[in-house]
Length: 401
Length: 213
Image 1 (cartoon, each protein chain N blue to C red):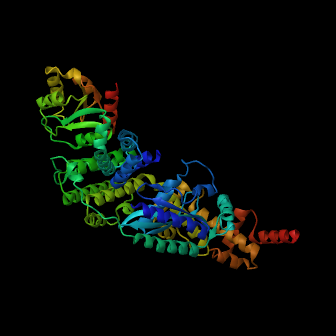
Image 2: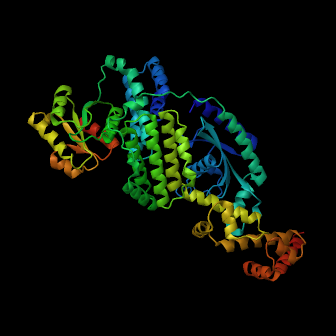
Image 3: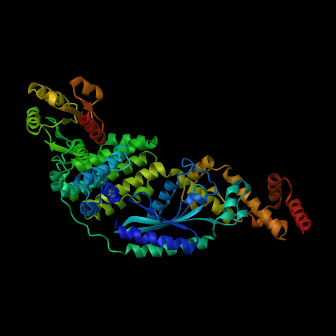
C-alpha cells in the first residue's frame, strides 16, 4: 500500500469527523489495526464504560465490521457489542481491501425507545449523536463515494520477482497434495473444538508446503493455492463453521486467484484469505452475534405494530430461525417473545402518556389485535391496567402543573 | 541522527517493504549510522519481532518470506560497509536435510529464520551424505550443524552424521541441532544431539543461545 493513500485517507477522516460530528477512524487491513492520527478511541464514548477488553474487544468488533464491508460491496452498518451503531466503508486499492473508514458511534432512536432493562441504551441515546436510519444510510453513501475516489488512484506497478524462485526447493508438490483426507479431518476437528492456535499452526504448515515445497512457477502456485483453499473450505464446513463470509460462492476464490498477476499479489490474496478465515471462524463470532441481535432488536422496535415472528426477524438479519433462536437465548437477558412484548408495552406507555387515542387503538398500534389480551399483558408487566396507567400519568402531569 | 530511522527500518522489514528498506538504509548511511547499527538495531530487530509473531502464529508464511526478501535487499546494500567496519555474522551454520530424505520445506524455513537472525548459513540442500556434512564443517568451520529429517525412515541418518563428525574428530568443534516432524527431545538426547526445536523461529532462537553460550 502506498503511504500517500493512508495519509490522504487519514487527512480526510479528520475533516469528516468535524463535518459529521461523529468520530471517523481509518482501519488498515494489512496491519489489522487502526492507523494513528485519525480520531480517539471509540470506546471512550461507550455507555457501558466497562474498560474491560475481554468483555468487548473493540478492535476485533471493528475488524469484523470492516471485513463485512468487504463482503457487502464496500459498506456495512453494524452494531458493536455495546449496542452502538457504526458504519464501515471500504477503500480498495488495486482491487483489494486496503483501508476502511469506520464512523461512529451513533444511536438510532430516542431514549424511550428502549425497554427499561436496557437502561444503558437510554443513557447512550441521551448522550451520543442520534441519527435516523435514513441519516445513517446517507452517511454510508457519502463515505462510499469518497472511498471510491481514493480507489481510483493508480496502484503501484507490480513487478515479477525472481526471489520467489529462490525460496523453493527442488522437489515440487505432487498434484493433489492438499487433498489428504486426514489433514482435512484434523482441521475440521480443530475448528469444531475452537482450537484457534492449532488451526493457525496448520495454516502455516500448509502454506510452508505451498511456498517452500513447490518447485512451481506462478501457474503451479495458483493450482496449489486453489487446492489449499478448497481444503480449508471443506474442513470449515465439516467443522460446522459458517463459511459464506470467507469464501462466498465456492468458485469465487478461483476467479480471484486467476486475477493475481504476480507472486506478490497471490501472496497478499492468500494472507488476506487466511486472516478472514481465522477471523470469521474463531474471532468474530460474538461480534457477528452482537450485530445480528442489535439489528433484530432494532427491527422489533421499528415494527412493533406489525406481526413479528422469529422467522421474520431471522430473515431480516440473515440468520436461520434456529440459529437466531439459539444465539438469542444464549446472549439476551430476556427471551424473544418476552422482548417483543416488553417493547410493545413500552410503546403503549408512550402512546398512553402522549396521545388521547382510545385503548383499542393503542393496542392495535403496538401490535395487539385483541384489546383484552393487551390489557392482560400490560397489567402483568406494569402492575396496573392501561386505563389506570393513563389516569395516573394525567394525575402526575396535572400535579406537576 | 535520529533513532526513528532504526524503528522505521524495523517496521519496513516486518511489513516486507523492500523499497522502503532501501530508501531508509541510504538515509541512515547519509546520517552517519554505522552499517552495524542499521543491520542489528534496524533490519535484524524487525526480523526478530516478526519471528516471534510467526512463532505465535500471528502472521503467515508469505508475510515472513516477503519480510525476508526485504531483509536480504537491506543486507546486500550494507555488505561493503559491513566488511569495512569488520562486522562478522554472529555465527555460521551448516544446514541440510539428511541422506535419503528429499524434504526441504522445514529446512528452508529454518535457513531463512537463521539468516534473519544474523547467521551466515551454508545450505547443503537435501539428501546430504554424512561425509558431505563432515567436509562442509572442515571447510566452513561453523559453530552449528543443523540436520533436518521429515521421515521416520530417515531420522536415523541424523545419528549417522553425528557419528561421522565423531569419526572425523570434529564433534567437539560444533553444536548439532536437529529438527523435523518425527523428531522429539528424547530422540535428540538418545543420539547425542545438542538441541532439538519444534519450529523454525525457535530454531533461530536456540542457535543464538548456542553461540552465545
